[in-house]
Length: 318
Length: 318
Image (cartoon, rainbow over all chains, first blue to last red):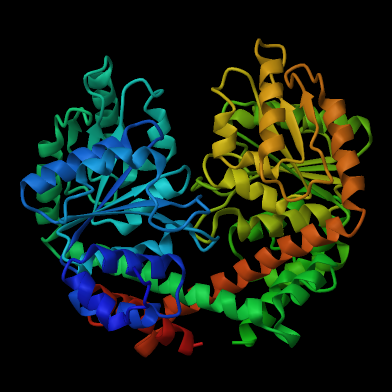
């Protein structure tokens, strides 16, 4: 097959019609930071906003991929079109190659109503905030009812995914150390639905009790929503329907009192800011003369200039 | 005692003379993002650059605080003036209050040649990059030969500390799970000296062997330096002298071929950029009218505007 470059309008039309190849190409443009992105995003904007963005987070080993697969099965039973975005902030690899442990997703690989994509989120531009929201827009415009974002990897990204989502699922499991781990990672504040996975193992009820206590003590932003704690066994699909029902209930909750709008405005704020800051950084990288960032940095390192004056020079260059 | 506001020149003079109160006040100005900071940093700049900045990182439970204390003792035996900055990126608390497990540092609390300070690194401005370098400048100008930066907490900050340091110490210990954990956290790439702490426990030699193998396979930036792996027992001080000697040897290595200058220029680059970006964010937060970020975000969330056009509007407002 020839790899003829499709035009942006063609790709956008293809994506809206649910063509997996067009969806994949558009997400690759995001990954590659293509100069076509402003045109792509302008064309997609009118067709976004319908999808419920569901974030999935939890410590390594908790069963995120298996849970994703079980949830996709449950959503498909309800006839929903589902997008899955597995974001790896540490991966140097781009492209649509499936990650190792995403092999379980092969159950859904032939389903035309399921879009699965792994994406590298490279660079030091604040982890997930630059590319992921734009990839979400592609899946949203492609008519997905649900877009599930799962982060692979460690650290900050586990909490960051909550910033992107309408609804955040936090996974725990027995036998992974005490609940203090979740507390430390800041996950008690951000979950909308908690899932105790591997609930057929000893200790699941204790994990649930601990979570309940710790969530009650956590400094949560919205007391009107009491996050449910659902027990599940992702490998058998047990509990997946209940999680799906709670996700739907949370969507209804968000639609009251302007909550969904508020969350999405906050998300758009971060997205817009990240795009603007990335553009500024690029300008500074390319600058020469007085506002050459490397030259300023060398003077600061030598003690000839202080960092505030250097920053001021940089800003004046805009 | 009256809490009369000392002038910036007074505080800078006090800090240069090694007055702990002045040092503490200046670091508080950094924490509080005081509008006096440009003046403070301009006054300090000529007196910076002598200190060796040593980063200390490793998983929770590995013995970071105890190791810090043992190293301070070893440096003091050599007559060095030492600053310790314990940065907690997740803490909402500011001020000089010592953290719980820093109680061990009380050994050094009465030593006028040791400055110990814990600092909250709040905000979403990229973790450590905004305030920490400025606090380092204060300790540097106060005549510290060594400034040790230890991060408390989890995630990204463990790797970030390496960006700030001339020399990075990575701690491991037996019995904390396999070395894969270190690999995942990205610590195999950033260490200049590896320390296997708790070396009196079974498994220390195995940890060392694993580390050696994994470091050899890691994608490290500078092959000319082969990072040593030192066994230590921080609670008894065993191995501390050897670590101190390796840190000195690494400083000598850095002073060849412009390596120290290159590291510090890179650090200054991040510092200057972080200050400039923070100022821009503040401008955008306060903007009204066409470049009101909240207004732009609401339009993006509603699908009336795409994020690239919104970002362009924001940038044009500068």
